[in-house]
Structure formats: structure tokens, C-alpha cells
Length: 141
Image 1: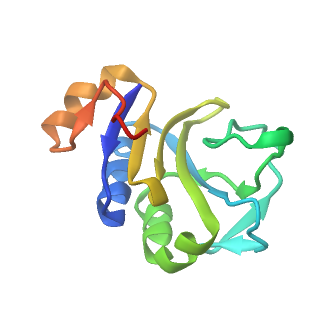
Image 2: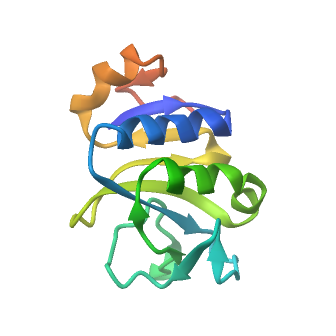
Image 3: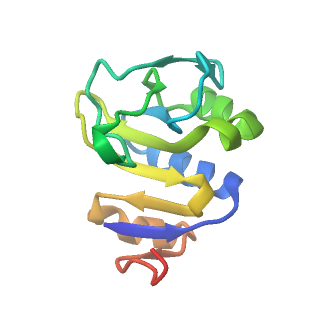
């Protein structure tokens, strides 16, 4: 696992955009359990029919809702960037997935100021791009 401490929302979005620029990925937003919206950042909220793995797990097997997955490109990532205040209220995490895979590749957990990347082969490219990547979890994590 790669850990990137990034408190700034725009830098978190830039990291997702950076990763999406080199791969064919999809993006979705995972909602907080108490969020009661039918759309988020202009995207439909759904139960999770594709059985994507969420970033955060909850007690009692609660399954969070998420936005419908869309191609991770400038337009979709820009929509999430523009919806900062909406995301701050309703969104637990933003996640990137490789198409036709259910495990997430990377995620940003905005309220924690943490970005996680599961593909360790991306470590050097993240460091070279200026992200404070580490293979060790921060002490507070």
C-alpha cells in the first residue's frame, strides 16, 4: 500500500487525475452512511449493483451507497472538483477502479487528508510527480 498525506482537496483531486491519465479507470464517490442524496456532483447515487469494494467498512455489515461509476477523465474528475462543498457534506471517499475489476486501485479520503494507492509499482511515479508518497502508514493512521 502507498500512503500519501495530502490535506488539500485540490491536491487530492490532482492525484486522482494524475493516476487516471495513465490508465483506463473509472471513478465513483462513496457516501457517508447518513447521506440522503439521490445525486452527488451530478452523478446518480446507487446501492452498488456492480459490487465494487468500498474504501471504508462499517460495523454490522452496512453497505454504503455510491455514485454510479463513470470513466475517470477530465470531465468527471472536474465535476467532483467543482462539487467540493457537496462532497464535504456527503462523501466519505473518492475511488478509482480499473474497468471490470471490483477492488479499488486508489482512493482519497478527504476528511482524513489521506490518499491510498494499492498498486505499489506506482510509488516512484508518484514521488517523481511531487506527491509525498510513503510505503509506511503514518503513525496516526
